[in-house]
Amino acid sequence: MGGTGTGTSIISTYPYSSLAATYVSGVIDDIRAEVNDPDSTRFTDAVILSILKKAIRRCNRIAQRNGLNFAKAYTTLTTVANQAYVSLPADFDTAFGKKCLYRDSDHTQIIPMNEDEWETVISPATLSYCLIDQTLNVIKLAGTPSAAETLTFWYYPVINMDSWTTSTKATDAMPWNGKLNDIIVEYAALRLKNLDEMDASLDLQLMTDLENQILQAYAPLSPQIIDGKGWNA
Image 1 (cartoon, rainbow, N blue to C red):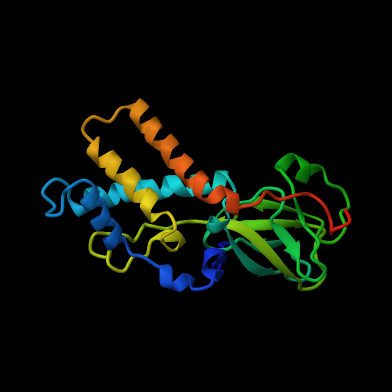
Image 2 (image 1 turned 90 degrees about the vertical axis):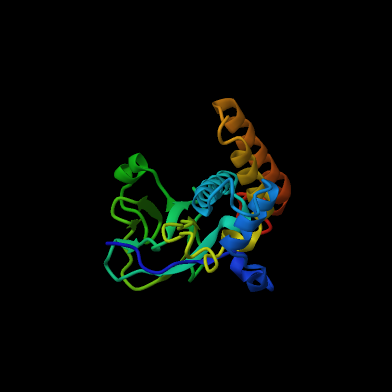
């Protein structure tokens, strides 16, 4: 029961977002400028690309851990009558936690459960609860629907860089329409400058600085979810 389709990134819905797209080749050039290696005499593209991928993976986990808006995506899922699950989107990485799945018909939340809660729920109303099962790549539904219903699912998508190579760098687009490019360039350049002398304490210092820069820039734009129903709750 593999997932199908991918979601719509939050950032792709911003006005003029397509104009902000940047490519890996340009970021590699910026990193070379930072480490004073314009002629590729110190570092190959392959080495820089490896560091760049690690920086992106780390940025993605920071964004997920702190609920940053630009890293989120959403998609529409449709239930099948008398079927107690829907497939996860193909690009699913992780969910938000306790607020991620909604019925479009009345905008009510389908409450996520952990395994213990799921195993002890008894006679739930239709589409009351769900369990994200990444082993089967499905969202299990408690209160099996008797008809097709449209759901909206919010989640963090995978940043897939498996196909990125030095040969494809000119067409591989940076994630998040380049919002973190400057921060990523600085982090990657510092790692390269210390590649031969890297120790655990310096790596921790770079990670802390990376996280601080991202949070200072984007945390104010990502309001925390507040429990409540409507304005009068």
